[in-house]
Length: 89
Image (cartoon, rainbow, N blue to C red; front, top):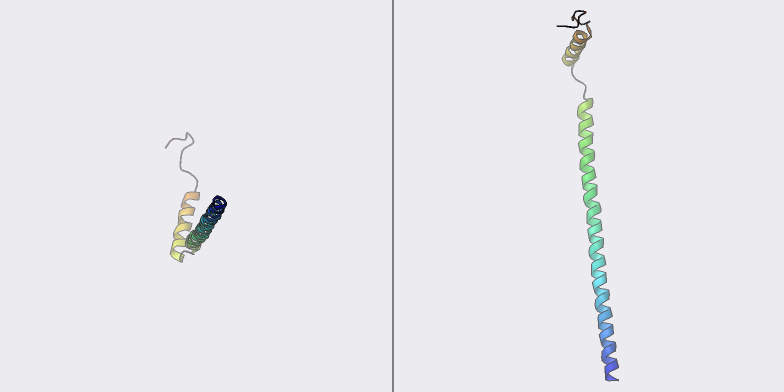
């Protein structure tokens, strides 16, 4: 009978140990998951801010002098070519 009691005590202690290890492991994995989600949200926020800055900078209207220079360049480029018919310069 004493052997049965010692075996029962051992199995209860082993079960308690296994359950405590599993609960600590589960809690650690849950914390890692929460941390990964939060860091991905921070990265997404930074990417959205960067994209917003890119769009804002590309849509900024240039001033009138820049428009005039762009139009002058377009007019110059749209003139017929001065290359002879032989296609030599």
